[in-house]
Length: 380
Image (cartoon, rainbow, N blue to C red; front, side):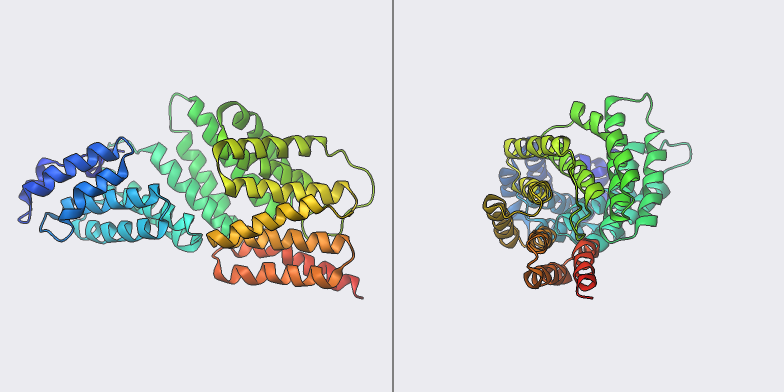
C-alpha cells in the first residue's frame, strides 16, 4: 500500500504554512539511512529538529522514523509512544491510509509489550480505516488487509476471545484469496492461518483438531520458513502432540508412548532458535523439552531439566516476560506434582496465575488453574 509515509517529501507538503525546507532535507537524509537499516544515523539526522517548526506531515514522518528506530532496537514502549503521537496528528489531518499504517505499526509495538487488548483494537481500527479509505473502483490492498486481520486474530487468541479470533481468520483468508496468482508467500500465509487455528483449538482442548491444522502447516513451514519463526512453530507442534498425551495441568498418563516425533521437533526447534539467536523461542523449546522429559521418564527427577527451567525463569524475569514466567512456574508445578510433592506444586501453580495479573494474556492462566483443580481433586 502506497502512502505519504513512503516518501520523505511530496508536493502537498508545501501548502502547509509551517512547511520547512530544512526539515525536508533532514527527512530526505533520514529516509536514506532508514531504508538501509541504519536507524541510529536516521535519528541523528532528525534529532536537531525535534523542537523546530515544520509542517504537520513532516512532523508525522519524523515521528514515524523515530517509531521505526525504537522498534528496531526493541524499545517497544518508545515505539508505541511515537506511533501514538503520529496517529493523533494524522487523525486531525484526515489521511486514512497513513492512519491505518500507523495503527498497524503501533499495534505491533503494543503486541510486543504484551498489551494484547490495546493491540487488537489498533489492528481492528486500522482494518476498518483501510477498507473505508478505498476510492470507488480502487483495488483493496489485500496483502496489508490480510496482515491486519491475522494480527487481530492472534491478539484475540491471547485475550481468550476465540470466536472473534476465528472470525478474524476467516476474514484474513478471504483477503488472501484475493491475491492472484497464488504464490509461495500465499501458501506460507495460509500456513500461518492454520497455525493460528491450531492455537485456538489447543486452548479449547480440542487437540485432534489442533493437530489437524498443525499438520497442514508443518510441511509449508519446513520448506519456506527458517530461524525463530520455524522454531516457534516446531514448539507449538510438539506442545500439541504432548497435549494429546497429557495436557498441561493434568496428571501424567500411565503407559508407554512414542515420543520420537516430539523429541525431533524439540531438537530442531532448539537448533533453529540458537542459530537465530532468539533466546525467548529457545526458552519455549526448553520448557517443552522439560515436559517431554517428565512424561517420558514417568516423573523421575531430572536435574538438567530443572536447571533449564531455572534459566528460563531468570530470562523471563530479566525481560519482564510474564507469559514466559508463568509457563516456567507451570512446568515447575507439573514436575512437583509428578514427584507427588503436592504442596510445592500448588505454590508454583498459584505463582503462575499471580504473575499474569500484570499481563494482558489471561488465557495463559488456563493451564495452572487446571493444575490447581487437579490437585484439589486429589485431596478428596
